[in-house]
Structures are given as structure tokens and as C-alpha cells.
Image 1 (cartoon, rainbow, N blue to C red):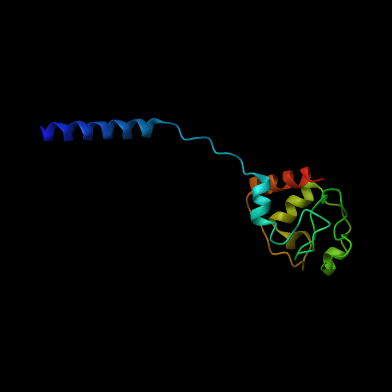
Image 2 (cartoon, rainbow, N blue to C red):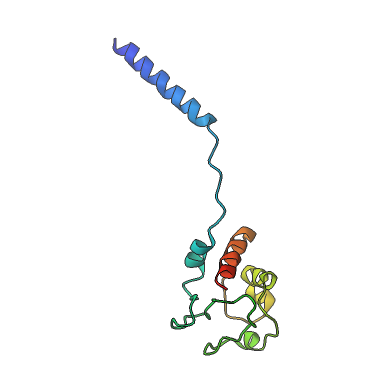
Amino acid sequence: MRVVVLGLCTAMVLLVRVADAQMPLPATRPPDGATLFKQQCAVCHTLSLSEPMRQGPPLVKVLGRPAGKVEGFHYSDGLAKADFTWDETRLDAWLANPQAVIPGVVMVYRQAKPETRAAIIAFLKEQN
């Protein structure tokens, strides 16, 4: 009798494994910008002008703001002399490689994944 019971259990396990193997994987969700900001940006940046400055300037209303111009923040020479306004394209290039946008800046963060940069930029756009 035990052999029959074990045989049925083994057969059921095999059926479950076959069914699991045929089930489609859940669709991957796009990265969440708020979570990505918290994980990758919030160590150095705030989203409030009223919070104490961190290693980087606050990023609230960064889109449409002149680069290197937050009052009270000490920028590197290159950023202090920058002559552009942050837009999505410039911010995407900055997040990919800040030193390529302005040589000599101190920001070392680089994000190679376009979808991650896009999610962070979309989140920052919501903060405007």
C-alpha cells in the first residue's frame, strides 16, 4: 500500500511542477520613480527647500531651473558657471554621466539603464 501512496504523491508533484512550468511569468513592472529616487538619490538630495542641504542641492522643481543656481548651495566651479536650464534631455544625460555634461563636477553617480533614468526624471517632473 505504501508504494501506491508514494507513487500517487510523486505523480501529483510531477503534475504540479508541469503546471508551474507552463504558467506564464508575471509581467515585470516598470521601475517606480519614487522608490528609485529614495534608493539612489535621497542620500545626497532632498525634495524640499526647507530641509537642510545635503551633499547635493535640493531637487524640488529642478526641471526648468537654471543649473547651478540654488541659493545657499556651494556648487563646483563647472556647475556654478553652467549656462543652461535643466530639461528632461539634459537631466537624462546628467544621470547617465555627469562628468560628460560638465567636466570636473563632483557628482559620481551614474545610471546606465535608460528606463531607470526615465523613471527618476518622471518622478522629479511630478515634483515641479
